[in-house]
Image 1 (cartoon, rainbow, N blue to C red):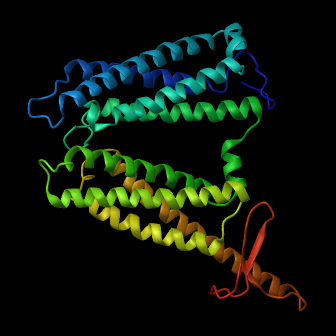
Image 2 (cartoon, helix red, strand yellow):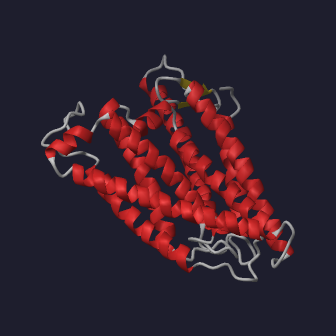
Length: 339
């Protein structure tokens, strides 16, 4: 364990459970990727050309190599932390930070390779459906674990509370960041399927290609809006409330339409995979944004009502409060006033 200042006690690390979990995830991913690489043979009727197949084989080797390196490193780190001397040499040092960053980068690339339908590993090259659950889900689990390791290291060593910074920097920054990541995956997965099946259109219907184009459009628009809002919140700690609320409503409508068509029987996201999961995640993120905006607006009206009842000289104003002491008010609770 660590003291509040990040110093180590008895040779134990607050990240030991993360390292041990990462070790387990890397074992499962390594075994699944090796098995899939050895047994996967492109059929003669496969839609890919020879050059694409060669690129896929290279990416398959990368997945095996990356998971092998991660397995070796996480095994060594886990063993080191079982002994006080080994933990003292590694835990909380710059070496640990460098190793974590390298593994996070490796695993981000691994998830990209594994979940790419063109590589024929965890998802089908035909419809993007998950065909190897161990490889797909545990590669994502390893990526999430690498992010948690990074956050824990920054908080324990440099006292940087990443989650707290997101919460206090500006309201809804976490939801907008999650929406940004989800829309990027939706856009990328849709573009991937469009390139495979619709340029030119092969064994799919015209409706399939239209709905794939819809996925690209929804993902691109959602990404552009999310980038704009996240940028404003990071640079100025705030975004205009009415603008944020209106854009949240627009994105909710877009993602609702997108999910309806993309995950339907004729859509590209009907099978369980990146496009299916992240289409729904994006929709849930927009719903969360709307709920947060409504809650914040009601809170502003409640505060104004309290001020009005507290004394005769207090002017009642309905508004919305922003964290970190940056307040702005709506003179008209129905939205008629300025910000």
